[in-house]
Length: 310
Length: 276
Image (tube, rainbow over all chains, first blue to last red; front, side, top):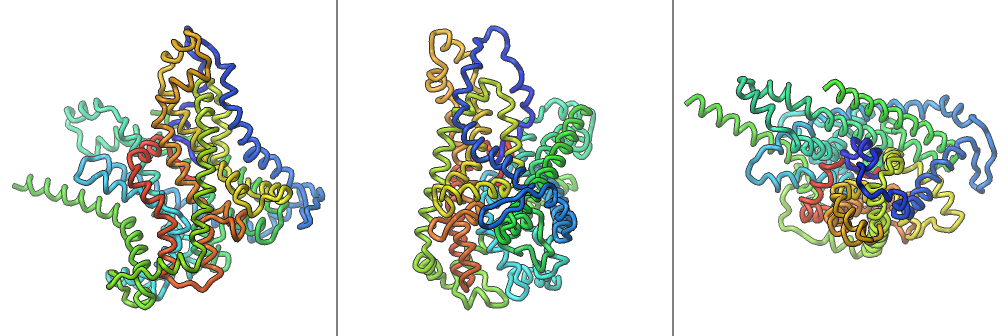
Protein backbone atom coordinates (compact mmCIF):
# COMPACT_ATOMS: atom_id res chain seq x y z
CA UNK A 1 0.00 0.00 0.00
CA UNK A 2 2.76 2.20 -0.52
CA UNK A 3 3.54 3.99 -3.59
CA UNK A 4 5.18 3.63 -6.82
CA UNK A 5 6.79 5.97 -9.25
CA UNK A 6 4.12 7.46 -11.37
CA UNK A 7 6.23 6.89 -14.43
CA UNK A 8 6.01 3.19 -13.84
CA UNK A 9 2.32 3.37 -14.65
CA UNK A 10 3.45 4.20 -18.12
CA UNK A 11 6.35 1.77 -18.40
CA UNK A 12 4.21 -1.33 -18.61
CA UNK A 13 5.04 -1.49 -22.27
CA UNK A 14 8.76 -1.11 -21.70
CA UNK A 15 8.68 -3.86 -19.09
CA UNK A 16 6.81 -6.23 -21.36
CA UNK A 17 9.00 -5.61 -24.38
CA UNK A 18 11.51 -8.29 -25.26
CA UNK A 19 15.15 -7.23 -25.13
CA UNK A 20 16.50 -6.07 -28.48
CA UNK A 21 18.31 -8.68 -30.53
CA UNK A 22 22.03 -8.96 -29.87
CA UNK A 23 21.69 -8.79 -26.11
CA UNK A 24 22.73 -11.76 -24.13
CA UNK A 25 19.37 -13.18 -23.06
CA UNK A 26 19.54 -14.49 -19.57
CA UNK A 27 16.15 -13.37 -18.34
CA UNK A 28 15.45 -16.85 -17.02
CA UNK A 29 18.12 -16.43 -14.36
CA UNK A 30 16.60 -13.28 -12.90
CA UNK A 31 13.79 -14.90 -10.98
CA UNK A 32 16.32 -15.66 -8.23
CA UNK A 33 16.72 -11.91 -7.55
CA UNK A 34 12.97 -11.50 -7.24
CA UNK A 35 12.35 -14.67 -5.21
CA UNK A 36 12.79 -13.30 -1.64
CA UNK A 37 10.49 -10.36 -2.35
CA UNK A 38 7.94 -12.67 -3.97
CA UNK A 39 7.91 -14.94 -0.91
CA UNK A 40 7.31 -12.00 1.45
CA UNK A 41 4.71 -10.39 -0.82
CA UNK A 42 2.88 -13.72 -1.05
CA UNK A 43 2.89 -14.04 2.72
CA UNK A 44 1.86 -10.52 3.73
CA UNK A 45 -0.17 -9.37 0.72
CA UNK A 46 -1.52 -12.19 -1.43
CA UNK A 47 -2.34 -14.59 1.40
CA UNK A 48 -4.42 -11.92 3.18
CA UNK A 49 -6.38 -11.22 -0.03
CA UNK A 50 -7.32 -14.86 -0.50
CA UNK A 51 -8.10 -15.20 3.18
CA UNK A 52 -10.36 -12.14 3.04
CA UNK A 53 -12.39 -13.57 0.18
CA UNK A 54 -12.75 -16.77 2.20
CA UNK A 55 -13.70 -14.93 5.41
CA UNK A 56 -16.33 -12.88 3.62
CA UNK A 57 -18.43 -16.01 3.29
CA UNK A 58 -18.01 -16.99 6.95
CA UNK A 59 -19.52 -16.13 10.26
CA UNK A 60 -16.63 -15.73 12.67
CA UNK A 61 -16.83 -16.15 16.44
CA UNK A 62 -14.44 -14.65 18.95
CA UNK A 63 -13.43 -18.20 19.83
CA UNK A 64 -12.00 -18.56 16.34
CA UNK A 65 -14.69 -20.96 15.11
CA UNK A 66 -16.22 -20.16 11.74
CA UNK A 67 -19.25 -21.37 9.84
CA UNK A 68 -20.11 -20.98 6.18
CA UNK A 69 -22.89 -18.48 5.55
CA UNK A 70 -22.58 -17.99 1.80
CA UNK A 71 -23.46 -14.47 0.70
CA UNK A 72 -25.43 -13.66 3.85
CA UNK A 73 -22.81 -11.11 4.96
CA UNK A 74 -23.27 -9.19 1.72
CA UNK A 75 -27.05 -9.42 2.00
CA UNK A 76 -27.02 -7.96 5.53
CA UNK A 77 -24.52 -5.33 4.44
CA UNK A 78 -26.78 -3.87 1.78
CA UNK A 79 -29.56 -3.47 4.32
CA UNK A 80 -27.27 -1.79 6.83
CA UNK A 81 -28.05 1.93 6.55
CA UNK A 82 -24.88 2.81 8.47
CA UNK A 83 -22.85 1.03 5.76
CA UNK A 84 -24.78 2.66 2.92
CA UNK A 85 -24.36 6.09 4.51
CA UNK A 86 -20.63 5.48 4.92
CA UNK A 87 -20.39 4.87 1.16
CA UNK A 88 -22.10 8.23 0.59
CA UNK A 89 -19.69 9.96 2.99
CA UNK A 90 -16.74 8.30 1.27
CA UNK A 91 -17.76 9.56 -2.18
CA UNK A 92 -18.51 13.05 -0.86
CA UNK A 93 -15.10 13.17 0.81
CA UNK A 94 -13.33 11.66 -2.20
CA UNK A 95 -14.77 14.02 -4.82
CA UNK A 96 -13.70 17.10 -2.82
CA UNK A 97 -10.49 15.47 -1.56
CA UNK A 98 -9.39 14.76 -5.14
CA UNK A 99 -10.60 17.83 -7.02
CA UNK A 100 -9.23 20.48 -4.65
CA UNK A 101 -5.69 19.07 -4.16
CA UNK A 102 -5.37 18.40 -7.91
CA UNK A 103 -6.45 21.96 -8.71
CA UNK A 104 -4.26 23.68 -6.12
CA UNK A 105 -1.38 21.25 -6.65
CA UNK A 106 -1.31 22.00 -10.38
CA UNK A 107 -1.34 25.75 -9.70
CA UNK A 108 1.45 25.31 -7.15
CA UNK A 109 3.53 23.32 -9.65
CA UNK A 110 3.21 26.15 -12.21
CA UNK A 111 4.41 28.60 -9.55
CA UNK A 112 7.32 26.45 -8.32
CA UNK A 113 8.41 25.70 -11.87
CA UNK A 114 9.52 29.33 -12.26
CA UNK A 115 12.80 30.62 -10.92
CA UNK A 116 12.61 32.91 -7.90
CA UNK A 117 14.72 33.69 -4.82
CA UNK A 118 14.64 31.06 -2.02
CA UNK A 119 12.73 28.67 -4.28
CA UNK A 120 14.40 25.57 -2.79
CA UNK A 121 13.66 26.56 0.79
CA UNK A 122 10.06 27.58 0.06
CA UNK A 123 9.45 24.37 -1.88
CA UNK A 124 10.75 22.34 1.06
CA UNK A 125 8.34 24.11 3.40
CA UNK A 126 5.52 23.54 0.92
CA UNK A 127 6.30 19.81 0.69
CA UNK A 128 6.57 19.30 4.46
CA UNK A 129 2.87 18.60 5.16
CA UNK A 130 2.88 15.41 3.10
CA UNK A 131 5.95 14.16 4.96
CA UNK A 132 4.74 15.04 8.45
CA UNK A 133 3.23 12.26 10.58
CA UNK A 134 -0.55 12.48 9.90
CA UNK A 135 -1.55 11.52 13.43
CA UNK A 136 0.71 14.12 15.02
CA UNK A 137 -0.42 17.00 12.82
CA UNK A 138 -4.06 15.93 13.09
CA UNK A 139 -3.80 16.42 16.86
CA UNK A 140 -2.79 20.02 16.24
CA UNK A 141 -5.67 20.47 13.76
CA UNK A 142 -8.05 19.17 16.44
CA UNK A 143 -6.86 21.92 18.76
CA UNK A 144 -7.16 24.52 16.01
CA UNK A 145 -10.77 23.51 15.28
CA UNK A 146 -11.87 24.03 18.89
CA UNK A 147 -14.96 26.32 18.59
CA UNK A 148 -14.16 28.54 21.60
CA UNK A 149 -10.39 28.32 22.08
CA UNK A 150 -9.24 27.35 18.60
CA UNK A 151 -6.94 29.64 16.71
CA UNK A 152 -8.87 29.26 13.43
CA UNK A 153 -12.04 30.92 14.71
CA UNK A 154 -9.89 33.72 16.12
CA UNK A 155 -8.17 34.26 12.76
CA UNK A 156 -11.57 34.28 11.02
CA UNK A 157 -12.86 36.87 13.50
CA UNK A 158 -9.97 39.15 12.51
CA UNK A 159 -11.34 39.33 8.96
CA UNK A 160 -14.93 39.57 10.16
CA UNK A 161 -16.08 36.00 9.49
CA UNK A 162 -18.36 34.54 12.21
CA UNK A 163 -17.02 31.54 14.17
CA UNK A 164 -17.49 28.13 12.55
CA UNK A 165 -18.48 24.86 14.22
CA UNK A 166 -15.89 22.91 12.13
CA UNK A 167 -15.99 19.26 13.16
CA UNK A 168 -18.65 19.86 15.80
CA UNK A 169 -21.48 20.22 13.27
CA UNK A 170 -22.56 17.21 11.14
CA UNK A 171 -22.97 19.51 8.13
CA UNK A 172 -19.41 20.85 8.21
CA UNK A 173 -17.57 17.77 9.55
CA UNK A 174 -16.68 16.30 6.15
CA UNK A 175 -15.74 19.64 4.50
CA UNK A 176 -13.50 20.30 7.51
CA UNK A 177 -11.79 16.92 7.05
CA UNK A 178 -11.39 17.76 3.36
CA UNK A 179 -9.61 20.97 4.38
CA UNK A 180 -7.10 18.87 6.35
CA UNK A 181 -6.74 16.46 3.41
CA UNK A 182 -6.03 19.37 1.05
CA UNK A 183 -3.39 20.63 3.47
CA UNK A 184 -1.69 17.21 3.62
CA UNK A 185 -1.79 16.09 -0.01
CA UNK A 186 -1.68 19.14 -2.30
CA UNK A 187 2.15 18.87 -2.20
CA UNK A 188 2.03 15.34 -3.65
CA UNK A 189 0.09 16.58 -6.68
CA UNK A 190 2.49 19.51 -6.95
CA UNK A 191 5.51 17.17 -7.09
CA UNK A 192 3.96 14.90 -9.73
CA UNK A 193 2.97 17.84 -11.96
CA UNK A 194 6.33 19.52 -11.35
CA UNK A 195 7.98 16.35 -12.65
CA UNK A 196 5.83 16.71 -15.76
CA UNK A 197 6.71 20.37 -16.24
CA UNK A 198 10.42 19.58 -16.02
CA UNK A 199 10.15 17.34 -19.05
CA UNK A 200 8.22 19.72 -21.32
CA UNK A 201 9.84 20.45 -24.68
CA UNK A 202 10.84 24.08 -25.43
CA UNK A 203 10.14 24.16 -29.18
CA UNK A 204 6.33 24.57 -29.11
CA UNK A 205 6.68 27.67 -26.93
CA UNK A 206 9.29 29.21 -29.20
CA UNK A 207 7.12 28.85 -32.27
CA UNK A 208 4.04 30.03 -30.35
CA UNK A 209 5.94 33.16 -29.29
CA UNK A 210 6.85 33.87 -32.89
CA UNK A 211 3.19 33.45 -33.82
CA UNK A 212 2.32 36.04 -31.15
CA UNK A 213 0.47 33.77 -28.72
CA UNK A 214 -0.50 35.17 -25.32
CA UNK A 215 0.56 33.58 -22.02
CA UNK A 216 -2.92 32.22 -21.51
CA UNK A 217 -3.09 30.77 -25.03
CA UNK A 218 0.26 29.05 -24.53
CA UNK A 219 -0.91 27.59 -21.22
CA UNK A 220 -4.27 26.50 -22.60
CA UNK A 221 -3.05 24.99 -25.87
CA UNK A 222 0.48 23.77 -25.08
CA UNK A 223 1.16 23.35 -21.38
CA UNK A 224 -2.17 21.90 -20.30
CA UNK A 225 -2.43 19.18 -22.99
CA UNK A 226 1.19 18.12 -22.39
CA UNK A 227 0.65 18.04 -18.63
CA UNK A 228 -2.60 16.12 -18.85
CA UNK A 229 -1.06 12.63 -18.43
CA UNK A 230 0.66 13.78 -15.23
CA UNK A 231 -2.49 15.40 -13.88
CA UNK A 232 -4.29 12.11 -14.57
CA UNK A 233 -1.66 10.16 -12.60
CA UNK A 234 -2.13 12.57 -9.71
CA UNK A 235 -5.89 12.10 -10.05
CA UNK A 236 -5.63 8.30 -9.88
CA UNK A 237 -3.27 8.28 -6.91
CA UNK A 238 -5.31 10.90 -5.08
CA UNK A 239 -8.55 8.96 -5.70
CA UNK A 240 -7.08 5.74 -4.31
CA UNK A 241 -5.75 7.55 -1.25
CA UNK A 242 -8.83 9.65 -0.55
CA UNK A 243 -11.02 6.52 -0.64
CA UNK A 244 -8.78 5.03 2.05
CA UNK A 245 -8.69 8.07 4.37
CA UNK A 246 -8.27 6.88 7.95
CA UNK A 247 -5.69 8.56 10.22
CA UNK A 248 -7.17 12.05 10.13
CA UNK A 249 -10.72 10.77 10.76
CA UNK A 250 -9.67 8.62 13.72
CA UNK A 251 -7.88 11.51 15.38
CA UNK A 252 -10.08 14.47 14.48
CA UNK A 253 -13.69 13.22 14.47
CA UNK A 254 -13.81 9.46 15.22
CA UNK A 255 -16.47 9.37 12.53
CA UNK A 256 -18.59 11.94 14.34
CA UNK A 257 -20.55 13.89 15.27
CA UNK A 258 -22.71 10.77 15.49
CA UNK A 259 -21.78 8.97 12.28
CA UNK A 260 -21.67 12.14 10.13
CA UNK A 261 -18.07 11.64 8.98
CA UNK A 262 -17.89 7.85 9.08
CA UNK A 263 -16.27 6.72 5.82
CA UNK A 264 -16.00 3.21 4.44
CA UNK A 265 -12.53 2.62 5.86
CA UNK A 266 -13.53 3.80 9.33
CA UNK A 267 -16.74 1.72 9.23
CA UNK A 268 -14.57 -1.25 8.27
CA UNK A 269 -12.20 -0.59 11.17
CA UNK A 270 -15.06 -0.42 13.67
CA UNK A 271 -16.65 -3.65 12.42
CA UNK A 272 -13.36 -5.54 12.47
CA UNK A 273 -11.53 -4.27 15.50
CA UNK A 274 -14.15 -2.70 17.76
CA UNK A 275 -17.07 -5.11 17.23
CA UNK A 276 -14.94 -8.07 16.08
CA UNK A 277 -17.37 -8.97 13.28
CA UNK A 278 -14.57 -10.42 11.19
CA UNK A 279 -16.71 -12.12 8.53
CA UNK A 280 -18.88 -9.04 8.10
CA UNK A 281 -15.82 -6.77 7.89
CA UNK A 282 -14.24 -9.06 5.28
CA UNK A 283 -17.34 -8.61 3.13
CA UNK A 284 -16.84 -4.84 3.45
CA UNK A 285 -13.22 -5.28 2.31
CA UNK A 286 -14.36 -7.16 -0.79
CA UNK A 287 -16.79 -4.38 -1.73
CA UNK A 288 -14.22 -1.73 -0.90
CA UNK A 289 -11.69 -3.47 -3.12
CA UNK A 290 -14.19 -3.69 -6.00
CA UNK A 291 -14.87 0.07 -5.74
CA UNK A 292 -11.17 0.95 -5.71
CA UNK A 293 -10.26 -1.30 -8.64
CA UNK A 294 -13.27 -0.15 -10.69
CA UNK A 295 -12.50 3.54 -10.13
CA UNK A 296 -8.79 3.10 -10.82
CA UNK A 297 -9.45 1.21 -14.05
CA UNK A 298 -11.91 3.90 -15.11
CA UNK A 299 -9.34 6.64 -14.46
CA UNK A 300 -6.50 4.70 -16.12
CA UNK A 301 -8.76 4.18 -19.12
CA UNK A 302 -9.49 7.91 -19.21
CA UNK A 303 -5.76 8.57 -19.04
CA UNK A 304 -5.04 6.20 -21.89
CA UNK A 305 -7.79 7.85 -23.93
CA UNK A 306 -6.47 11.33 -23.21
CA UNK A 307 -3.12 10.13 -24.54
CA UNK A 308 -4.60 8.74 -27.74
CA UNK A 309 -6.50 11.94 -28.36
CA UNK A 310 -3.41 14.07 -27.86
CA UNK B 1 6.06 53.76 -17.61
CA UNK B 2 2.70 51.83 -17.60
CA UNK B 3 4.62 48.90 -19.02
CA UNK B 4 7.06 48.96 -16.10
CA UNK B 5 4.15 49.31 -13.70
CA UNK B 6 2.40 46.30 -15.19
CA UNK B 7 5.55 44.25 -14.93
CA UNK B 8 5.92 45.28 -11.29
CA UNK B 9 2.30 44.35 -10.54
CA UNK B 10 2.78 41.00 -12.21
CA UNK B 11 5.83 40.33 -10.09
CA UNK B 12 4.00 41.40 -6.95
CA UNK B 13 1.11 39.11 -7.80
CA UNK B 14 3.51 36.23 -8.29
CA UNK B 15 5.16 36.70 -4.90
CA UNK B 16 1.75 37.02 -3.32
CA UNK B 17 0.76 33.64 -4.75
CA UNK B 18 3.98 32.11 -3.42
CA UNK B 19 3.12 33.49 0.03
CA UNK B 20 -0.43 32.13 -0.18
CA UNK B 21 0.90 28.69 -1.14
CA UNK B 22 3.51 28.42 1.58
CA UNK B 23 1.68 30.03 4.50
CA UNK B 24 -0.76 27.20 5.42
CA UNK B 25 2.13 24.80 5.97
CA UNK B 26 4.16 27.42 7.80
CA UNK B 27 1.24 28.48 10.03
CA UNK B 28 0.35 24.97 11.17
CA UNK B 29 3.93 24.00 12.00
CA UNK B 30 4.63 27.29 13.76
CA UNK B 31 1.40 27.01 15.74
CA UNK B 32 2.43 23.48 16.74
CA UNK B 33 5.76 24.85 17.96
CA UNK B 34 4.07 27.74 19.74
CA UNK B 35 1.62 25.43 21.58
CA UNK B 36 4.46 23.21 22.71
CA UNK B 37 6.43 26.11 24.19
CA UNK B 38 3.63 27.78 26.19
CA UNK B 39 2.13 27.03 29.58
CA UNK B 40 -1.46 25.83 29.87
CA UNK B 41 -2.77 29.28 30.81
CA UNK B 42 -1.47 30.83 27.57
CA UNK B 43 -2.59 27.84 25.48
CA UNK B 44 -6.22 28.24 26.51
CA UNK B 45 -6.21 32.05 26.47
CA UNK B 46 -8.56 33.97 24.19
CA UNK B 47 -7.52 35.84 22.13
CA UNK B 48 -4.73 33.29 21.57
CA UNK B 49 -1.17 34.04 22.59
CA UNK B 50 1.00 33.58 19.50
CA UNK B 51 4.53 34.09 20.74
CA UNK B 52 5.47 32.24 23.91
CA UNK B 53 6.87 34.68 26.42
CA UNK B 54 8.87 33.43 28.04
CA UNK B 55 9.09 30.05 26.24
CA UNK B 56 8.97 27.07 28.57
CA UNK B 57 10.33 23.57 28.05
CA UNK B 58 8.11 22.17 30.79
CA UNK B 59 5.88 20.44 28.24
CA UNK B 60 8.80 18.56 26.73
CA UNK B 61 10.09 17.56 30.15
CA UNK B 62 6.62 16.28 31.03
CA UNK B 63 6.42 14.22 27.83
CA UNK B 64 9.61 12.37 28.67
CA UNK B 65 8.88 12.09 32.39
CA UNK B 66 5.31 10.81 32.29
CA UNK B 67 4.48 9.05 29.07
CA UNK B 68 7.03 6.30 28.50
CA UNK B 69 8.05 8.33 25.47
CA UNK B 70 11.52 6.80 25.42
CA UNK B 71 10.10 3.28 25.12
CA UNK B 72 7.81 4.20 22.21
CA UNK B 73 10.61 6.05 20.47
CA UNK B 74 12.75 2.91 20.72
CA UNK B 75 9.84 0.79 19.39
CA UNK B 76 9.48 3.13 16.41
CA UNK B 77 13.20 3.00 15.69
CA UNK B 78 13.27 -0.82 15.86
CA UNK B 79 10.11 -1.38 13.79
CA UNK B 80 10.88 1.21 11.11
CA UNK B 81 14.61 0.46 11.07
CA UNK B 82 14.03 -3.27 10.72
CA UNK B 83 11.36 -2.88 8.05
CA UNK B 84 13.54 -0.52 5.98
CA UNK B 85 16.60 -2.75 6.31
CA UNK B 86 14.77 -5.92 5.28
CA UNK B 87 12.95 -3.90 2.62
CA UNK B 88 16.29 -2.87 1.12
CA UNK B 89 17.83 -6.35 1.36
CA UNK B 90 14.87 -7.88 -0.44
CA UNK B 91 13.62 -4.98 -2.53
CA UNK B 92 16.85 -3.87 -4.23
CA UNK B 93 17.61 -7.27 -5.84
CA UNK B 94 13.91 -7.60 -6.70
CA UNK B 95 13.94 -4.21 -8.45
CA UNK B 96 16.98 -5.36 -10.41
CA UNK B 97 15.40 -8.69 -11.29
CA UNK B 98 12.22 -7.01 -12.49
CA UNK B 99 14.06 -4.36 -14.50
CA UNK B 100 16.35 -6.90 -16.20
CA UNK B 101 13.99 -9.86 -16.36
CA UNK B 102 11.16 -7.66 -17.68
CA UNK B 103 8.69 -9.32 -15.34
CA UNK B 104 5.70 -7.05 -15.83
CA UNK B 105 3.38 -9.37 -13.92
CA UNK B 106 5.17 -8.78 -10.68
CA UNK B 107 5.11 -5.04 -11.30
CA UNK B 108 1.34 -5.18 -11.70
CA UNK B 109 1.04 -7.18 -8.47
CA UNK B 110 2.72 -4.36 -6.59
CA UNK B 111 0.50 -1.81 -8.31
CA UNK B 112 -2.56 -3.65 -7.00
CA UNK B 113 -0.98 -3.87 -3.56
CA UNK B 114 -0.74 -0.07 -3.64
CA UNK B 115 -4.49 0.21 -4.18
CA UNK B 116 -5.64 -2.15 -1.45
CA UNK B 117 -6.64 -0.61 1.88
CA UNK B 118 -4.33 -1.50 4.78
CA UNK B 119 -7.21 -2.88 6.80
CA UNK B 120 -7.72 -5.64 4.27
CA UNK B 121 -4.28 -7.04 5.14
CA UNK B 122 -4.84 -6.42 8.80
CA UNK B 123 -7.88 -8.62 9.34
CA UNK B 124 -6.21 -11.84 8.10
CA UNK B 125 -2.84 -10.95 9.59
CA UNK B 126 -4.49 -10.19 12.92
CA UNK B 127 -6.05 -13.68 12.99
CA UNK B 128 -2.83 -15.30 11.83
CA UNK B 129 -0.78 -13.40 14.41
CA UNK B 130 -3.19 -14.45 17.14
CA UNK B 131 -2.58 -18.08 16.24
CA UNK B 132 1.21 -17.77 16.18
CA UNK B 133 1.35 -15.32 19.10
CA UNK B 134 2.63 -12.25 17.25
CA UNK B 135 -0.17 -9.83 18.22
CA UNK B 136 1.26 -7.11 20.43
CA UNK B 137 4.87 -7.86 19.53
CA UNK B 138 7.40 -5.66 17.78
CA UNK B 139 8.30 -8.52 15.43
CA UNK B 140 4.68 -8.77 14.27
CA UNK B 141 4.53 -5.01 13.71
CA UNK B 142 7.79 -5.04 11.79
CA UNK B 143 6.53 -7.80 9.48
CA UNK B 144 3.42 -5.75 8.63
CA UNK B 145 5.55 -2.69 7.97
CA UNK B 146 7.19 -4.68 5.16
CA UNK B 147 3.90 -4.13 3.32
CA UNK B 148 4.91 -0.46 3.21
CA UNK B 149 8.65 -0.64 2.64
CA UNK B 150 9.02 -3.42 0.05
CA UNK B 151 6.68 -2.06 -2.66
CA UNK B 152 8.08 1.47 -2.36
CA UNK B 153 11.71 0.30 -2.59
CA UNK B 154 11.03 -2.13 -5.43
CA UNK B 155 9.27 0.57 -7.47
CA UNK B 156 11.95 3.15 -7.01
CA UNK B 157 14.69 0.61 -7.78
CA UNK B 158 13.01 -0.58 -11.00
CA UNK B 159 13.26 2.98 -12.30
CA UNK B 160 16.91 3.36 -11.32
CA UNK B 161 18.03 -0.05 -12.63
CA UNK B 162 16.26 0.58 -15.93
CA UNK B 163 18.51 3.61 -16.35
CA UNK B 164 21.71 1.59 -15.89
CA UNK B 165 22.89 0.98 -19.47
CA UNK B 166 22.45 -2.69 -20.25
CA UNK B 167 25.51 -2.63 -22.57
CA UNK B 168 27.84 -2.46 -19.56
CA UNK B 169 26.36 -5.61 -18.14
CA UNK B 170 26.28 -7.34 -21.51
CA UNK B 171 30.00 -6.85 -21.79
CA UNK B 172 30.56 -8.22 -18.30
CA UNK B 173 28.38 -11.24 -18.94
CA UNK B 174 30.13 -12.03 -22.19
CA UNK B 175 33.41 -11.88 -20.25
CA UNK B 176 32.06 -14.58 -17.95
CA UNK B 177 30.50 -12.65 -15.07
CA UNK B 178 27.61 -14.37 -13.32
CA UNK B 179 24.34 -12.40 -13.09
CA UNK B 180 25.04 -11.95 -9.37
CA UNK B 181 28.50 -10.48 -10.04
CA UNK B 182 27.10 -8.21 -12.71
CA UNK B 183 24.48 -7.01 -10.21
CA UNK B 184 26.96 -6.67 -7.35
CA UNK B 185 29.81 -4.92 -9.19
CA UNK B 186 28.10 -3.02 -12.01
CA UNK B 187 24.40 -2.33 -11.56
CA UNK B 188 24.38 -1.96 -7.76
CA UNK B 189 27.05 0.78 -7.54
CA UNK B 190 25.49 2.69 -10.45
CA UNK B 191 22.01 2.58 -8.91
CA UNK B 192 23.19 3.66 -5.46
CA UNK B 193 21.33 7.02 -5.53
CA UNK B 194 18.11 5.04 -5.94
CA UNK B 195 18.88 3.10 -2.78
CA UNK B 196 19.15 6.37 -0.84
CA UNK B 197 15.90 7.69 -2.30
CA UNK B 198 14.01 4.42 -1.75
CA UNK B 199 15.39 4.00 1.77
CA UNK B 200 14.45 7.54 2.81
CA UNK B 201 10.90 7.35 1.45
CA UNK B 202 10.35 3.89 2.96
CA UNK B 203 11.59 5.23 6.30
CA UNK B 204 9.24 8.21 6.23
CA UNK B 205 6.11 6.27 5.33
CA UNK B 206 6.87 3.47 7.77
CA UNK B 207 7.60 5.95 10.57
CA UNK B 208 4.33 7.79 9.94
CA UNK B 209 2.20 4.66 9.81
CA UNK B 210 -0.55 4.58 12.38
CA UNK B 211 -3.06 1.89 11.47
CA UNK B 212 -0.82 -1.18 11.91
CA UNK B 213 0.29 -0.15 15.35
CA UNK B 214 -3.21 0.83 16.46
CA UNK B 215 -4.50 -2.66 15.59
CA UNK B 216 -1.51 -4.91 16.30
CA UNK B 217 0.55 -2.95 18.82
CA UNK B 218 0.39 -3.86 22.48
CA UNK B 219 0.80 -1.49 25.41
CA UNK B 220 4.55 -2.07 25.42
CA UNK B 221 5.15 -2.55 21.69
CA UNK B 222 3.24 0.24 19.97
CA UNK B 223 5.06 2.81 17.87
CA UNK B 224 5.02 6.58 18.41
CA UNK B 225 1.99 7.61 16.31
CA UNK B 226 -0.40 5.26 18.07
CA UNK B 227 1.23 5.94 21.45
CA UNK B 228 0.52 9.66 21.04
CA UNK B 229 -3.01 8.91 19.91
CA UNK B 230 -3.61 6.71 22.96
CA UNK B 231 -2.39 9.40 25.32
CA UNK B 232 -5.12 11.59 23.79
CA UNK B 233 -7.94 9.17 24.53
CA UNK B 234 -6.95 7.55 27.79
CA UNK B 235 -5.45 10.33 29.80
CA UNK B 236 -6.75 13.76 30.45
CA UNK B 237 -3.82 15.45 28.80
CA UNK B 238 -3.54 19.16 28.17
CA UNK B 239 -2.64 20.90 24.91
CA UNK B 240 0.95 21.89 25.69
CA UNK B 241 2.38 18.41 26.37
CA UNK B 242 0.29 16.95 23.54
CA UNK B 243 1.66 19.46 21.03
CA UNK B 244 5.18 18.80 22.35
CA UNK B 245 4.70 15.03 21.91
CA UNK B 246 3.23 15.51 18.42
CA UNK B 247 6.16 17.68 17.41
CA UNK B 248 8.69 15.16 18.73
CA UNK B 249 6.97 12.33 16.81
CA UNK B 250 7.10 14.14 13.48
CA UNK B 251 10.46 15.90 14.02
CA UNK B 252 12.65 13.06 12.63
CA UNK B 253 10.77 12.98 9.32
CA UNK B 254 10.66 16.77 9.06
CA UNK B 255 14.42 16.98 9.61
CA UNK B 256 14.94 14.22 7.06
CA UNK B 257 12.78 16.16 4.60
CA UNK B 258 14.97 19.23 5.01
CA UNK B 259 18.29 17.35 4.85
CA UNK B 260 17.36 15.04 1.97
CA UNK B 261 15.16 17.54 0.16
CA UNK B 262 16.75 16.91 -3.22
CA UNK B 263 16.47 13.09 -3.02
CA UNK B 264 12.86 13.23 -1.88
CA UNK B 265 11.80 15.59 -4.63
CA UNK B 266 13.59 13.38 -7.17
CA UNK B 267 11.90 10.26 -5.85
CA UNK B 268 8.45 11.73 -5.57
CA UNK B 269 8.27 13.76 -8.73
CA UNK B 270 9.28 10.60 -10.52
CA UNK B 271 6.37 8.98 -8.75
CA UNK B 272 3.58 9.73 -6.40
CA UNK B 273 3.02 7.84 -3.26
CA UNK B 274 2.06 7.65 0.30
CA UNK B 275 1.06 4.91 2.60
CA UNK B 276 -2.48 4.13 3.49
